[in-house]
Length: 244
Image (cartoon, rainbow, N blue to C red; front, side, top):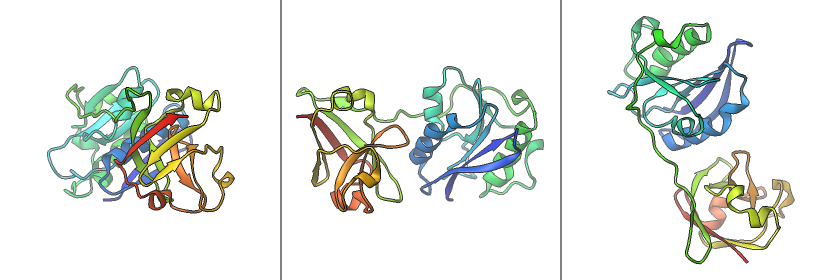
């Protein structure tokens, strides 16, 4: 199953494909929805279908915050929502009369998630969809750590289709670089990066550089090239940055 995030804006009555993610990749789905949901209008219903456990005992969920609704499998794909929102109500979707019947064992996105999203967008109250639960699945994204020498050590969270590497470094963790413009050395794969650009085209052909990506994390990129191939790194690869 190809992972996809859909967002239904009830005011406009239209579905937007927010982003597609790698097949079976729950972490990538969590990053995608976690970095994009706040750009949608209040009342938007987000349907997140990254569901390698479709047809198994994993539960379908309706998650409600102060502003949005999320419909997704109970596999941790909403972990960033749980971390970023002050108050969430998580319900196990059990009201089968809102499903499309017969329910396929391999396509709950069509037969359970999409119909429930439609009903919620039309005003069906969440408590009619299922009972509240507290034992839902969640995971913590890896956090960057300071070494005894003062460097910041992290990992590659994501590689997009262009080959850009998203680290788990955030600008607020590196104020000396962004506020003071001090020199730095970023080690990843077989490469050391020491240049920070504001946009991709600012880099020279073949140059590997750092940039703040749209997800709010520090990225390693190359102008018109796949940085992942150039530096020889993959998701999960270690990355370290130190101020010169």
